[in-house]
Amino acid sequence: MKRYDALKRIVDSLSNELVVCNLGSPSRELYSISDRNSNFYMLGSMGLVSSITLGIALAQPKKRVWCIDGDGSLLMNLGSLSTIANNQPNNLMLIVIDNSSYGSTGNQKTYTSGKTNLETIAEGAGFESITVIEKEEDIVPSLKSLGIGCHFVLIKTQPGNAQVENVPLLPEEIKKRFMKSLAEKI
Ligand SMILES: [Mg+2]
Image (cartoon, rainbow, N blue to C red; front, side, top):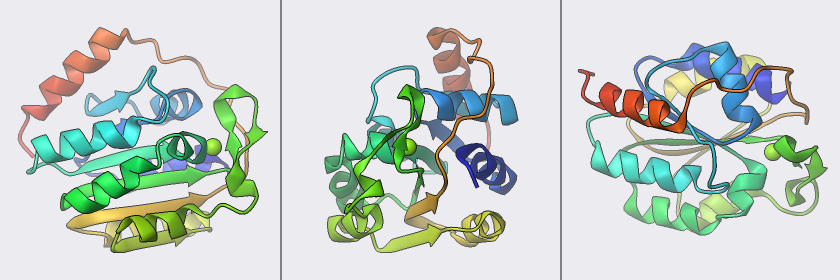
């Protein structure tokens, strides 16, 4: 399974959640699979997608918010794990697609290809709900079974990017339509 396959299954698991997606290839791939007004595609600020998701989850407690992060990005902002786990919003799911590489910059290896284990770090940070998924067919049932709570989900994949177009939206458009979707009924 590659990131693109995992994203397809994540999309299959969605109902009306807000989705905040990591920059680069993950956002491009998500856009090509299923664009929604309630998808926020990051175009900068590598590492901060989980922090942005926490802010949205705290500000919008009646909405469920899913974060799609990557191993390389999360490794840049590990402090976010303890911030999320201690605030513990019950409407947040942090999904890390761990392909052990910096996919958007040429698939250089990250340290999750070596000794580093992100689910162990998440546990130490204080997450009480941790799920590790290694098989593509387990993604939909696993994500659908996780209800209210503050969840850390790690999906282990192979490196590699799909050949897809850039997201053809201006940053302002992404922000405006996402904010508009916040006003819609759940
Ligand atoms: Mg990666």
